[in-house]
Length: 288
Image 1 (cartoon, rainbow, N blue to C red):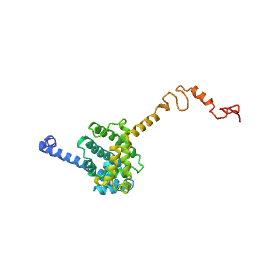
Image 2 (image 1 turned 90 degrees about the horizontal axis):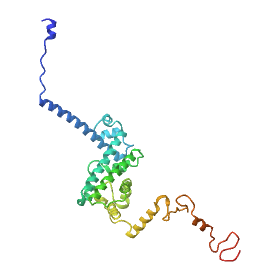
Image 3 (image 1 turned 90 degrees about the vertical axis):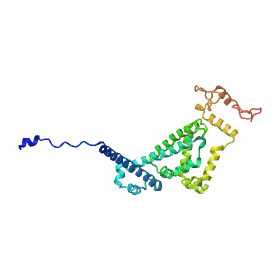
Image 4 (image 1 turned 120 degrees about the horizontal axis):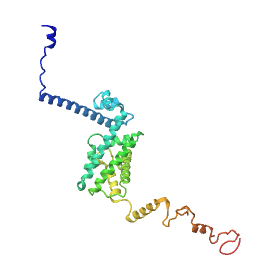
């Protein structure tokens, strides 16, 4: 057979790929993708544990890898750096808090407070993570706190709609104050344990002293209704625009258009009884 004939002789036709084989290939690819995502989640959760235990600065990539049972190179492969892994952990922790609070507010009249708090013990140590990372001086803390406040505005609105919470004149300010209060208590959790016998990082049932004091403040309030109304009036007066008084005058005796108040000037020139006048006499009769 000539070389020309050999070159033109068609080879065997490949057998078509069966649908079953294609499906098997797709399943393998999906499993590989799921495994990849599962590995990233495992590394993230391990990082939360390590950061909660020792803080971000004191935790190495090698330590996180050992906790997750992977190589340090795989940690960098998934997250690029420890700093970026920390950002992912912040976002995850904020999401866990948001989901738990949303579920609690959505329960409405069926809200089980202790049950809701116990769910915080499931999964990564979210509260211990916050207690450690909020004081490490990282610029990422600002973004984390802002996200927690924004989330609080949203889930507290659900609580208002479901009759769990009272409406607020300033929902964001209320959410910010309560968030800072809660985060501060976590940072100072050793002192709540010392002073109240309440370990905020442990079983909520062990934090009864803290919860009961908080319930007294938020449930019944601190001020009597009369004092509350008086304080509200004082604060409203203190925040009037530009310090204007009810008669349209500012505290320094100037009118709204910047001119001096003639009555104030007259009053300043009037000599009080018993005081010395320009001519050396005293008001009320007599000279020195």
